[in-house]
Amino acid sequence: MFRRRTPLTKINQIRSFIWPERGFRRLFAYFFQRIVRMPGTSASIAAGMASGVAASFTPFVGLHLLIAGLLAILFRGNVLASAIGTFFGNPWTFLFIWVSDYRLGLWLLQQSGYGEQLVVLSFQQLTEVMTTVIKFFTFSTDVDWQQMTMSLEQVFLPMAIGGMVLAVVAWLVAFVLTFYSLEVWRAHRAKRMAQASLAAKSRKKNTL
Image 1: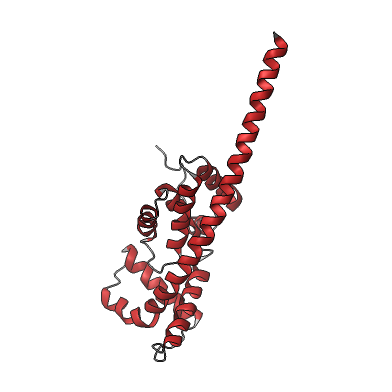
Image 2: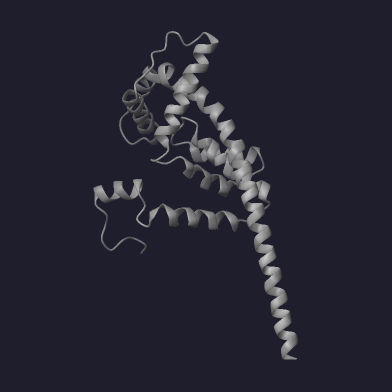
């Protein structure tokens, strides 16, 4: 009933995944409208959004929705907002997130004296490892646990450490931005509704 009349080809499916048909502007506008219309306090919605953004910085690809939901519950945030927040992790940002997680985690390990044996991987090597991780967590191909363990210490450990640090920073930044954006929007909306109410009363009074 809700399917397309003409199914998308494989190429078009990949293209629409990377670049939405209606563009990112309309996609962001849609998400913004969903967020501002959510019930709950600004703090609750902001905590949910921040949880989703923070989850995107963890290397546990395929589990971001679950992690975001658990964080939202922990911080008494809106779970639906946390799901929307996970869209921060997308094909346009994942490469930046992975490299940042890996570089920071590797640096922290080396500073603590435990990372001397780790080899700094190239961008291409890191991408190949993360592709394997995605396939493992999404069960899309026959990637077994043995293939995963080969890269755990070299890549996953630094990314997990760096990801946790960046997730904390991302949570704080996303919470502040979302909270104050909601406060400003709701104050503007309340003012506009008050003006509309006064105008309606004025028109009704003049007609009497």
